[in-house]
Image (cartoon, rainbow, N blue to C red):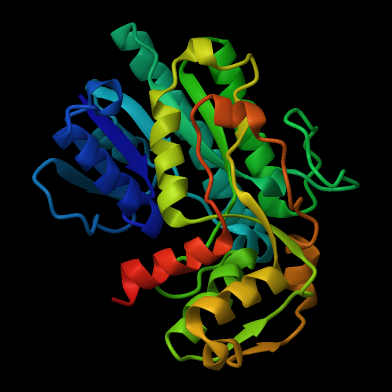
Amino acid sequence: MRIVITGGAGFLGSMVTRALLERIDAGRAPLGATHVTSLDLATSPVADPRVTSVVGNLADPDVLAQALGHDTVGVYHLAAVLSGGSEQDFDLAMAVNVDATRALLERLRTNGQESGRPVRLVFTSSLAVFGGQMPEVVPEHWAEQPDSTYGALKAIGELLVNEYSRKGFLDGRICRLPTISVRPGKPNSAASSFASGILREPLNGIPAECPVPHETRMWLSSPRTAVANLVHAMDLSADQLSGWRGMNVPGICVTVQEMLDSLERVGGAQARALVTDAPDQRVMDIVCSWPGDFDVQRMLELGFVRDEDFDDVVRQYVSDHLR
C-alpha cells in the first residue's frame, strides 16, 4: 500500500515523507501504507528504499498514471504555486493550482472506481481563502471571500475536493494550514515568506527586512506541528468529519512585534538588530487581508495540536537547524 505526495521533493513534502516512514517503522502508518511516492519536478531528497520518486508535471496524464497506481491508498496534495507567485503569474497559477488539481482528482476518481475503494486525499489549502471584513476570531464555518489570486484558486480547489468527496469519488480532507514558521533554507515565492525570513536570517547572522506593520497579526505553526497535523488528518475517518471537509488547522495568533520579541529572547539583541523595516505594499495587500486568529476548539477535540508559544517555535528552528 502506498501514499503519494505531490510536491514531495519540497520542504514540507520531505518532512511529511520522513514522518510517514517513522509511522511505518512504528507499525502505525495511515491506511496501512508501506511505501511513499514523491511526485514533483525534482527527486525526493529522502533516501530510503521505501520512497519512490516520480519526476514530472502533475498535469501530465502519463505522469499521473505512473505515480498513482492501484496500490495508492492515500494522497497528500501539497504542490502549488504560492501566494506571491500566483499574484505575479495568473496563468501559471491557474494551470497548477486549478487545472492540475482537477487532473489529479479525475485520476483519483478513476482509481477509486476501478478498485471499489475511494482514495483518501489530504488537500492543503490556506487561510488566504478568507478576506473582506472578518471578526477578531474567525469561527469554524466562516464563508470564504478571498482577496488574492492564490486565495481564490485555493477556494476553487476546496470546492472541487468537497464535491468529489460528496459524490463518493474520493475521501477528501481540506487542511487550511497556518503560515509555517520558521522554515529553513531560502525564501520562497509566498507573500508570507518574511514570517520565516525575519527570524531565520538574523539567527544566521544575516540582515532581514520586515515588509509589514509590526501590529500585523499572523496565524502561525511550526514545521513540526504542521507535519504532525497533516499526518493526523490522514488518520481521521470520514465519520469524524462533517459534510463540509474544510478544516482550519490549529495555529497560534502572534503579531509581528511578538515574533521580533521572541527573536530577541531566543537569539539575543544582536539578532533583533539585524531586522529593519522596509514596507512593501504588494506584500501588505496580500498578507494583511488574511485573518489572524481562528476558533479551532473542534479541531483540537479531533486530535489536532498547536504550538505552545512562539518562543518555542523559534527554539525548534535553532535546535533543528543551527546545532
